[in-house]
Image (cartoon, rainbow, N blue to C red; front, side, top):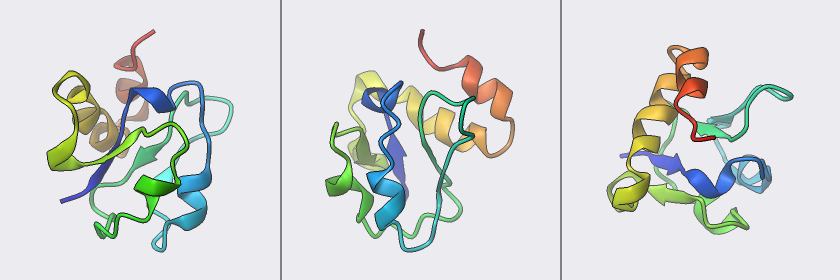
Length: 91
């Protein structure tokens, strides 16, 4: 299982989660991305990022609210096709 960053991160980009991640699996391209992304292949499911997020945007994959489920796909897609993932971010 992995963690997922959801809608509250959009246009917030607080990097507290990055600072506490022991495996550096949270990324974004500064000046381009509107949210942070967790690499599902690198995430070790430690949960350190979840309490560090000041806007409660991070959830364990199985706990992502139904109305935020699209972010499971978006986070994973960003590591394969950044432009496609960015296009799925709600305006």
